Structure formats: C-alpha cells, structure tokens
Length: 371
Image 1 (cartoon, rainbow, N blue to C red):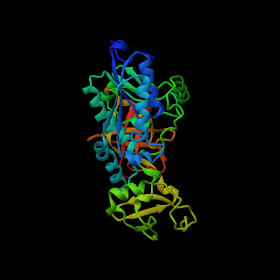
Image 2: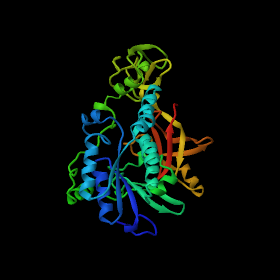
Image 3: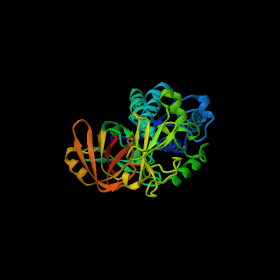
Image 4: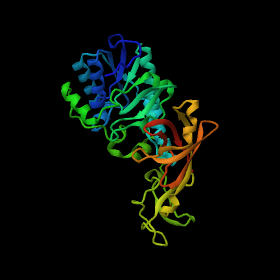
C-alpha cells in the first residue's frame, strides 16, 4: 500500500476509518492497521437498533455495530460508536420522504455521503486530530496538478463513483479510499486472510433504513397527509384510471398501472410525468419519455478552471447502473447547469443525479430538476 499521508510515515499518521460493520470497511481498517497506521474505527448509529436488527442486509445499526466492534477488537484498534440518529433523520430520511412527495426519485445514499459521512463524520475525524478519513468505497483518489482527483473504482462492477459525485474538493483532500484499486474478490480474500468474522457477510442491499424495500411505508409514516388518491391521465388530460398515491410511481414505469397498459393506438403506456400538486400521474407512449436536455442544480465540480472546457464533451450517467452516454454541460449562474444530449435519452427522473465523467475521472455532477 502506497503511503497515504504526504511527508509522514505510517507510524506517525492517524487515520479514522468509517466502519459500517461490512466486509469493505472492515478490510479497509485491517489493511491500514497492517501497514502500520494508527487506526481509529468509528461506527455511526444512524437509526433505531430494534428496527435494524429485524432487517438483514442493512448497515450502521444493530448487528452491524456489533460486527464492527468485533473486527476492531480482532485488529486491536480503538473503536467508537457515535449516535448520529438525529443528524441522519434530518439530513437523509426526511429529505427522502419530501423528495418522493414532490414527485421525485431520491438517492438517499448520495445524501448520506454528502452530509452525515463526509460532512459530520469528517468534522469529527478532524477534531480527533486524524490526518485522514478512510472509507471502504470502491473509488480511486489520485493526485493531480490542481489537487486530488476522483476516479472510478478499478472494479467496474463495484464502482461507487456515481454516489460520491457531491464530494467537494476540500473533502477529497482529506479522504482516502484504500480499496479503489482492488476487485471485490480480493477484498473478500483479505477478509479471510485476516480471519475477520465478517468475511462471508453479504453486501448491503437496497436502502438501509427502508424495511423490506417498501419506500411508501416510510413516506406514509413521515408524511401521512401526502398520501392522497388521484387520477391517472393521458397526455391530453383524459382520465384513464385512478391511483392511491403518486409515491407508488416512477418515471418510465410501465407495469402496475392497472389501466390496461396500452393507449388508443395500441402503444404501451409509460409514466412520463408526476404532478404532485394535482395528484396526477401522466402516462403516454415511450416517445413521450424522450429528453434532449435536462437542467440540474447544486452542481459540484471537481475540475480546475483550466479544465472547464472538458465539460463541453463528456460522458454522463443519470442512473447509477447505466452505461455513460455522451453529453455537453453548459454551466449557469447559481450552481446550475444544462446538460445537452446528442441523442435524446429516456426515462430521466428528477431527484436523481447526473454525474460527469472524462474517461474514468469524475468531473462532478448535480441534481436533476423537474423537466
């Protein structure tokens, strides 16, 4: 492992590791400890212990805190559990619910990294006198002429760059990602080599605070007044059916509309727009999902002024699992931008992120606004 702290030997360096109780963060702590760094493990309790212990595949609560503590004991490193439940509720869960009510499709994992982890936890690491905060994300940090640069993880199947686009330049200077060059299989092999109790533990699945994958239950609990029935209409406003709440629909959805599924010309119908104020779900043919450009806000850039020109010809992702597509980005005042596509794209949802890439490098991104 290369030296992670410039001009300091590992034995003179203190690194805080965010330990979620999973394999990746546990191996991160183990590798750093093996390399001679002074490692401190910190686990965040983000939501109720009792609820978390009932849900497998979650993180940051219940059994996962217990697992992180066991790994720290095995490695002989100090370990602390911080109660961030209130911070998480305010910064992530409530934002998640409000976004769904507004007819958007939120990404709470980005918000969690943006706020609770890379803002609040990073601040705590600094207060402890740490030289860096390390995480188990599969993403690479590389030194560049304008400071640290962010790149996709070497294991493209595990790359998490989409979820870290909002990382600021200042945060990136302090962060370290020891697993960025590793394939997942090698991480598992390290866990077995270190004889960690979590070596065979499954990866976290779905959104950690959503029991059984039911987003609507969370929204209904936090914003019960927002779950109201309404109409399903076509592009001309003709009522085709009814729904029990717009939070049950996403842009591009075809199944589960319960309106026969086809329009007057026998074309399949898709959700093309959500109108929360009118409580309407608008459906239409696939062509109505075509989007030649989108507007994004809260734009975060990880490029120097001399590199801004690259934004005119980049690759972008507007869903985490998609292959990047060509686009040009035009910056606008107020941390906004327009993203233009040479070829129209389909099923773009407000509330998602649009992330810019130059080859494997992450140039930044922003949040997609309603279009």
